[in-house]
Amino acid sequence: MSSRSTSSGQDVLNVLHDLSQLLNTGLDRDTLFTCVKMIEGGANPEALAAVIKELRKENAGKGKADLQIN
Image (cartoon, rainbow, N blue to C red; front, side, top):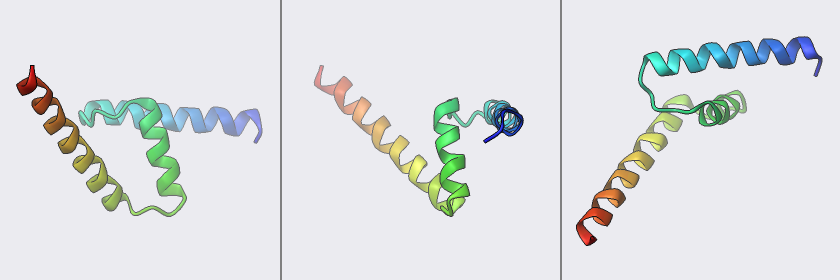
């Protein structure tokens, strides 16, 4: 990969991250990069979004359970 295409890819990721922040997705740059790569590889974007939502629900529930134990 040339430095020009690397720079262009970084610019795209920066713009996507800015949009992600404006939309309050809660995705950090690394997670966003992983999602983009998965979609480029053929993953269904709606299914990926559903998985992320489900993981967040499970994580939130786990945090509440931890608070109740203490």
